[in-house]
Length: 198
Image (cartoon, rainbow, N blue to C red):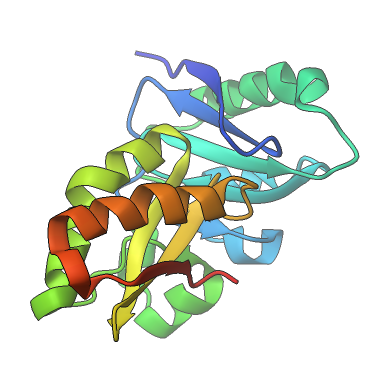
């Protein structure tokens, strides 16, 4: 079965989500420039396009942040066909598989691993579970990812990736969406939710 790709808009006007009918990866990774993408075949290929600013690869989609000098109306079809043609020209692979064999320091230098396997305990574990169960599916449907960075003195710090990183509505989402859900679930333990990306 060949790959087929369809396009979805995201809340971030600079980012478009390209969804595959097949799995692409078993990790969520964000590449902020071509040098970070050198070991990931699909991301490396996408950076060959001159208007690609960053690439976020997740299970069955790629979110692409374009440069400001082009409009998605002019390039979305080209990018969709480019991804589809590339994927159908190579064997079916897990595009993030080879990073498992690299030392963890190299992985963190080369790309931003958004599904970090850091062990959380106590309140942090509870917050991470709520983010995974209630928030992550909605964020992924918008072409992004969210992970817990830290929790201290009532302040929850999260990492935003993909379409969420740099999205104009991210602050509203953090304050009115994520913060409210965490307050509903955990009460006075939550004072504020902030982005670690700033």
